[in-house]
Image 1: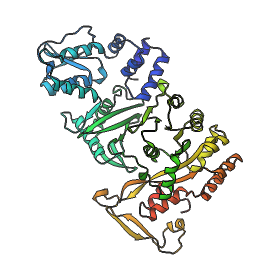
Image 2 (image 1 turned 90 degrees about the vertical axis):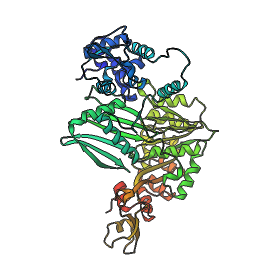
Image 3 (image 1 turned 60 degrees about the vertical axis):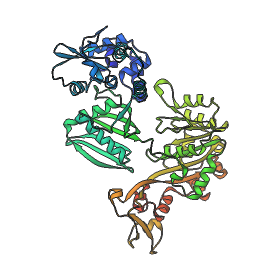
Image 4 (image 1 turned 90 degrees about the horizontal axis):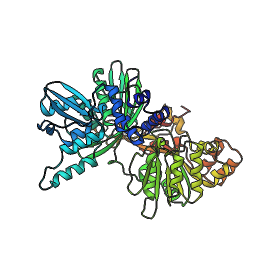
Length: 559
């Protein structure tokens, strides 16, 4: 097992087993590295951290180092030195790298060679973060005269964007350039996820576009470790440990556009498997019209969400657009006279005018705890990212019964099954009956590309005739033939398909009598609900998507 700060600190007795476990949980929830976890949780002093690094790296430590007045160190910018927390100084024929965070030194030597042209040997020493900050302040202090306001503005930008990586320009490092190229390509093509998968034949890089994974590159395995470490460094993860699960985040600047990344790393047979979720804050505008409702359902939805109290649930698997639908609902309610708070894990998109709370169990900010506190802050509308357990469900329903409108998600396969799921979680049927407003179950299907969309007649022997119950009658459908706009896929973008269950007295009576999911579903259909596959069929007949895509998404049982 690789030596990490937390592990070695525990082994030499600087922290207890309980402290280490709590710190590991904190790291997992927040995506920070060992040192940040130790500092934010105040587990060790700076001197203790330094002692542990001496044991791990065998570098000497320095208590009161000085920077020689030889202009060597002054060749570097404030951003370069603070980004990786090191200070290079000439020491005879060598360069000594003083650092407070030795785990961040992956690119230090390359940077020094690039900036100064130095071709000799390097040696290292350890300093505390306070000493590092003091040396940086001394190195970049004003020496007299008038204050340069342009420099102050530059430093202000530096602090405000300390964790933003500019991927717009080329870099002297081959690995950095490669990572930047992949990230730029993904952002420009509106890719939602990038997969870096180590296989025996190479590192596979796959892009997820419109819900479908496509192989983009196969890179040599000898660059795998460097590439993954570069992304881990950007995400503030531990590059020295490739045997643990890690989660982090980063922020990119690509030609002035800021994009957030969520990074997940897990150890696999051939190396570390890394997946990046791209959250482009710039391209998201949340509006109910984007949800793909029929006109009747959209009108119904807008009316229901404006109720003063109750609970509305969005259901479906991961990646079915539940969060997008919830954000659209909140955006419709986001007015100056309403207080809206969300409780999310994680907060994916920022919405101006809404208070968004990041769930962090390691710091006791759980869904139940945050929701309890949030309800004391005079709010009208609350969003609970997910109802995962009885406690969260109970508090959410209590909130909905005490004058709040609550939105949340649930992992179920149908709208009707969500109702019985709540009862199994411990919510009394009578509470569900008087509180639940509606359940929307949804999936995402690919849209036909509008640039190459064409009509065709359904074949006489098509198995879809059984699904459509159309006999031998002619049926006009649509598909994309493939063009440059859609990369010859025939699809561009996605649309939601839904079943919209509005709770009523009939369903409440069935619930009180212990009805089955089927009985509840049939009652909802009598009340106007269309099952999800039927909504998909109607969207295919309208030329929005295809029957093949609906079959892929929800699966027709009878063909």
